[in-house]
Amino acid sequence: MFNVIITIVVILAITGSIAAWINTRIIIEEIGIIKKELGIPERPRDHYGDVFDSDTPHRNDTEKNQEDTRQ
Image (cartoon, rainbow, N blue to C red; front, side, top):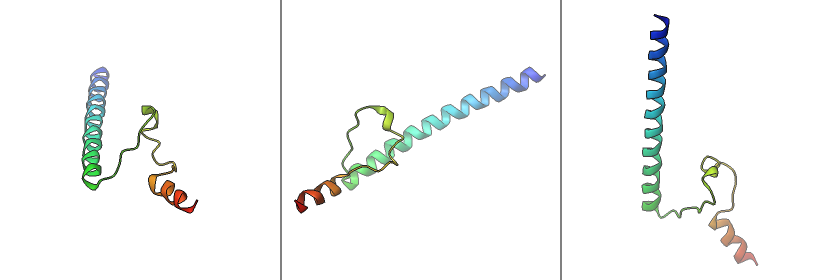
């Protein structure tokens, strides 16, 4: 009986993780569409390891343009 419960829990966990992954992919695609409609340029990525590091400060085009006009 205990094995059956553990098996059901594992199956539910795997199903939930797959559903969460699919949901995340859909959200990322929708954000891409919204960014294109708003005219927000895409940041080039050297590798895919920094996908979740977008909360770190970085120089965007506006800051770069402001520095260029000061010089």
